[in-house]
Length: 210
Image (cartoon, rainbow, N blue to C red):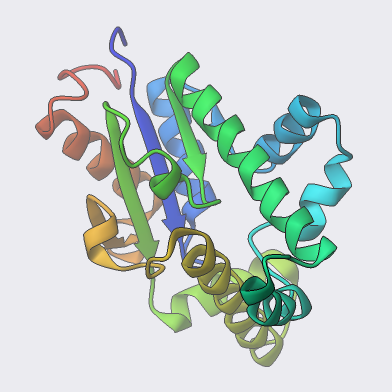
């Protein structure tokens, strides 16, 4: 593959987003960044990776509440500043990765961070609740009730995180090139569809995934 391509993937929890990302990476021969991105951000900043894990794709209620009441006085809580600073560091890392070469980047508002960059394609993946619940039950050995509860919690956290830092709406179609149900084509079929879409946009050439 001669031309650079950046694929960002937003996803509902349990929709198979990370599986699709790794399938894309395998087919295109390019790196995939998910948890690896947290480690890289920590390395770039000198902070502990554990700090990024703790704040990963979620915001604390306390910091949001504090920010609401302190903005008018020109100051922010220390916790709010730490979250905002970590988001900035992570965003800078995402941009460095994208500038360096081809990559698949999962979550972390990457479609927003790279919204002005060329040769990008932004995807949001969803699936019916019953499909996501079954996947989480199998993957984490949880009951149906606990799986549904975890999905609800994770989706809420991702939505609040995305909406706060981007001033947008998580999963809104206009923020992506395409929103699709990954259960229709399956993991491999979804990856192939995304590659075909990139070819139609002129980012990839025919045969780049062969």
